[in-house]
Image (cartoon, helix red, strand yellow):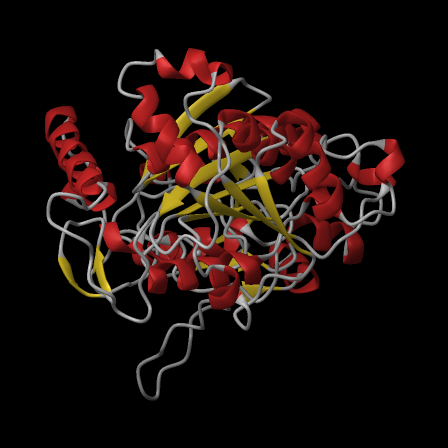
Length: 455
């Protein structure tokens, strides 16, 4: 299962044929995408200069350039200074399908990275070293001593400095020709469009739900791809959203949660997990900019450091943009869903959400509900509620047959994050008596059992 960090950073999909394409069909689809993108990026020589206001989209459709759309590698604000033919990139030049053309695409590209923290510290030097032309960094924070184990772009001497300055210096040591634009501001809906002006691709490695949704929505409006990632606890997830190609972050997590859910400040994070996730994010960015390989469109890459396993979770666009697909199985943040509507005059047969004291009373009653723990093995080893059935959130879709849909069941996790989406999943699957524990086992320890181990 995704580790505790797998959630929307402040994002239903149906299980459709697009999520189950055969390898041959998938390769054909991706090959056609590469061809279309190559046409979009091809210099306009034989056909004459491009008329002002015209653009070529990644789908190969030409026409008047919409105000809220951006064609990759056009309207450059500054000439790239990275030499794509440099001997420094010789090992990349000999890669099958990459070559000098791929290197030129990187030198011409402008990438904006949101967050110069744990993920950004892996992404930024990777892009600098690979030969990117222009890099914009967005982060309002300064370096703190507690950042140093995982935010390896910063050193002890950088404590107190702006992260964008420290990260820019680290990138310059690897690639002096790289043009770095520093934005020591918080990425938000108010400044998203301005910050993404002239950008070919955006990478969100922040720990902000608000920034994630702002980046997704702005990227969708501008027609550019978003590479996103998260790392919390012992696990990470990475994905690609590109509305122009039929999938974005809201297809995975439609509604923005009311809070950030699990965070590394609350649950901790293994520093190396940030490096793994950041490397994957940088690789996705390079693939998208050069047209090689198959990006993580409609798939989430999931990494669990405790088991050393990786897997992927497919998802697809729901034409109705409805609730989460029961087959998605991706850990996410607190649900923003509202209470289900009741028939006129009817009364709900059970509460949809229990507080810890309310659940304690229910468990002591004559007909106590069953308990379903959707956390990981390592979490259950620390603390659990007696008598729980444990099915990790990522396995819930495959193991739902182990549960009785007619029996009352209360789902819980660490902070009420995964359980909220598990509840939506169970309700959609016909579990009319399902509820979840708000605040999770952490809330239980705080208000019911102070002697319980906490993490």
